[in-house]
Length: 264
Image (cartoon, rainbow, N blue to C red; front, side):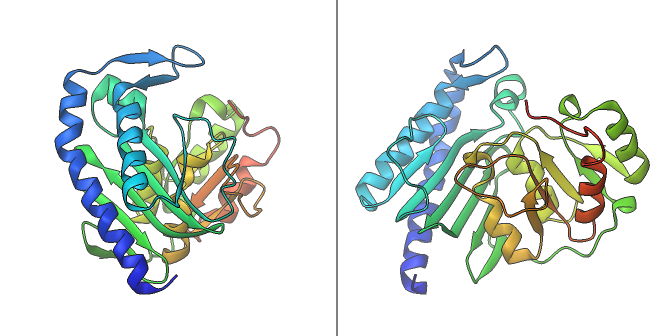
């Protein structure tokens, strides 16, 4: 895709993201929460309305683009063909409902299966992370640089302890500097991007949870793979790690020693 066209799309998306600053407070003020598969699987009017708002934006400005997103059926979409946006309208819905903090909007734009634009908008903290293929990554317009090499013994790592067995948690505690978990795949991943975390692991992400991270990883020299150290299919997702290059091999060795983790 030509630079001019890419920047035109980026300008339009940035303008759309700015509209959320007016929309989200009103939605939160009248928030309605329901459940999907179980009482921990929450969805709100905030999720649904933001996704509908973006779908209208695409229909108006880029009608040939398709939306592959959490709060809709995606059976008719081939995510690897044509212009496809993958969206999580609210990543960290539990955090939104219980804390009204530590949640974000995730957008990844793919052209014939290649990521070319990525956005993670940390709305509560007013931070917009953006990656443009071939032109780097930014937060609020400030250039992000490749994190310094970080050994596992010096790294804080992020994972869900409910899906890691006790022996593996013990091994991780011994091998790392510490553990944190924000509870939003996008925001946990951005801590890796900024060099604050050494690695983030998710054993059961969906495509919209990780759509934006591919481009950040490639632009900033990070490792993003399956937990078997294989290439990750963005259209199906599955257990994954985004990691500083200095932590990747050691993290996977621990996670794959015995029955280290499971899907949930």
